[in-house]
Length: 182
Image 1 (tube, rainbow, N blue to C red):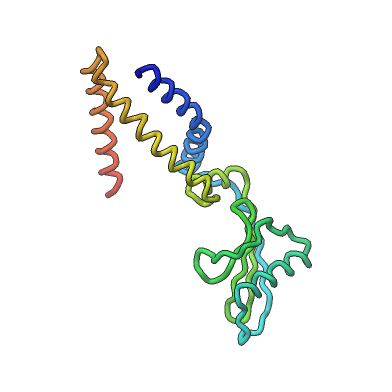
Image 2: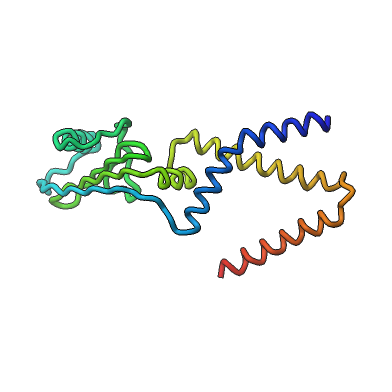
């Protein structure tokens, strides 16, 4: 049984290792203030303020505008509301085109992310749902790994230094977290 658990621990650790590197690398970039580059282009078009366009009309207008101006057209053309709920956007995290209607102006913006900003977007669950599911599985696996590590202290001949190390880490983390909140 011990050999079987060790094998499960080993293979699942290796399976999640690339994801751990992505989270670690993107976390370091975020904490050091480097967010990558997002190339943004903005276009403003005069529009009849009395004519409010519906979602499909906005999408069609956006696609026509991108096509007629030889701009990149996103692969995913499913309209989604923008974060501020004032318009729609199409595309995926690496390239997004959005359109908003404000009074007599239609504002079109395109966003092209580089590799680092894509990593940060994945870290903060702005990618597709299946990466989020993988991240949740990774979080559960980490919890199990650390819980099993704590349980393995019971069978170690170095119980006292291991428990001291654990409680020292718990104390330092709690102290820093508490004082960082205020």
